[in-house]
Image (cartoon, rainbow, N blue to C red):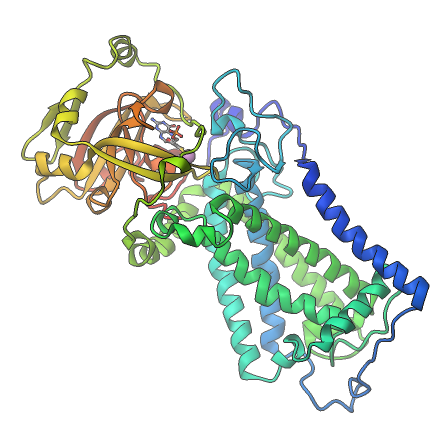
Length: 555
Ligand SMILES: Nc1nc2c(c(=O)[nH]1)N[C@H]1C(S)=C(S)[C@@H](COP(=O)(O)O)O[C@H]1N2
Ligand SMILES: [Mo]
């Protein structure tokens, strides 16, 4: 159980729990123009030419139908599981979003350049305002698990349920392809667009169009809506989700550019969440308005009857899903370690076999460097660090020890003479923001070469002068394999100058195939160890220990 002591209360249940949505006016105008424009055209058509005719295939009537109809078991069950997983994804997605409650079209995430924000606060520019300060509260009524800064658990649930969502989708599409049910969903004639428009004119002018019985066929607009949720929105959600992976984006930067960049992918991922939610609302409303009892029998029992059985079972199904939300919330607070480990047991082997094998490339140019990166973490308060800072870190000595043949003790000047490497790469924070910067430092490969780790050493631990969010030394670990990847370095320079204190002076870690929290700032010493289990609480880092983050965040 997470202790809800005063330190946690301060983080998760802050004084300021106001909720505001601010949207860039241009975006609102664009959206209003689009929707009002379409509705206006519909009215003009209706007033000028009357309601357009909708031809309903007379065969789509009970008994006479020859084509696919009804809802076989696999459709009914995938429909239920899809509802379950989609709502879990939406809820956990909202919790993740609130950890950096701003969405951008630019990868720099420059302060106050967002197109939408879910916080009443513009970014203060007169003082240090870290990404963590910026995280907002979200009520557990809509978020999973809810409260402020619960991104670790929210990600665990998001990634655990995404497997269910994808498997459900695959079963559904296989079912469609191996039966003639696909004919109900996939448009086969361009006439569908004019039919769909005619149907829209009905809805937009507040008239229910003549409805075919959904057991035998859909109206054109309904068919297009179903088709695009299954074949456009769902795949696009998965693809834009992947475009937020630091391992993938730092290996194939053009992949993120397909969506307009890493932050545009994140914005689209969110707009799809809105799209799915809007679909849910409209879908359920129309189901209720066009013969609720009969429609429920269709999708719950697979029969075309008017008995209330389907309705009761359907409501029971909805209750089960709501219970799942509540259980998931309580499990996240009572057994966070188990949830973390479950997600790790499933995701880590998959990542080791896929994303973690990608080698970062460094193709960003100086022109692409972000004007200013969001800072994160708490500045060290230790006296020894402050003293070193007074002396411009000239007296700083990095100690490299643990399971090595040659322990090292290096000053910044010595590191500069031994080897200097430079990369320009994109930083991805778990909270959602990104930024591009140039880093200069000594490669971890060089440190490994000089220190000569013993065969027993499998991991490298980096300890900071600074503390973690709930107190205690900030640290993190890397596998030697990842420490040897291109771009993995101890950086003492950022954008051509010595690291400033906000960004980790005197020394910080850069590992480009993972999320930002792995990149320890204000490094004091390094230790080669046999396993992450022997340090801290054994999860691999301060955030992994205290905030249930992943040991290997390639995504
Ligand atoms: N010592 C220490 N290092 C840390 C953190 C921290 O809280 N303490 N935060 C991490 C996180 S979550 C991120 S995103 C990056 C932020 O790096 P930046 O401030 O240079 O943008 O630092 C990482 N390193
Ligand atoms: Mo982060």
